[in-house]
Length: 336
Image (cartoon, rainbow, N blue to C red):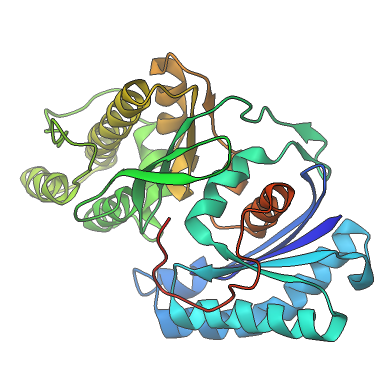
């Protein structure tokens, strides 16, 4: 079985091919960062237009890199939500066209669930890297990105249970706003991560831990960072590095503490960290250092939006016959 995964939920056009052993054969990601960086954020209309421009060439490259033909593909998986409606429509319509023309089954995939299944990819055949994958359940999964910060429990039948989520802003969005305050550009998360590495110093800074709840809140921390940054103007490189390190430490402390506590409370056998913010170097290090449980984090290129996670979801859930394989309606919001 060979699976084609298609991901266009936001601003990355990505197509990937994975085999039935969950070995990654090809992973093509076309970024739109240069398009949106001049605006300081993602413009939905521009994103959907760029997907239209990029998707056919990305598909051809994906097929070529995997050394397969279209007829070799067994199943097509495509993100159908949550995400930007215009962007989702491009990927779903492209997938429908392939499915109709080749008579291949088409699977609609929940983008957030798929992020979790990036941790089930066993090997990257392009780089020959192998990865440890979860084997014991239940798992506590933290899905942390520019649009979401969700804690979900996953059982051995791949059923998801929402444990907690942000009440306001997502962690990735908070990183982007902090970077914007410091004029570091967009996307801001990688810039904050980079400048944090230049300093071991930090300012006193609050953490919003919401004791007694598994939910998150980052809006107050954003306001605190706004006030702190105003007090430290004009900026120089040392101040920027210290500010970035301060904010990054605070965000990571909240995510790690609440995730580990939830995993212990629900008697989980491991922790999965995924989503774009899972590429943050400090989060990766601190979760692995602090957790008494095994921690599974995809390699960085599989944390941000990608078609490989879509294909991996299809491979694993096809085995368990879990998914509604006819559900390909486009939805901006999908629940677990």
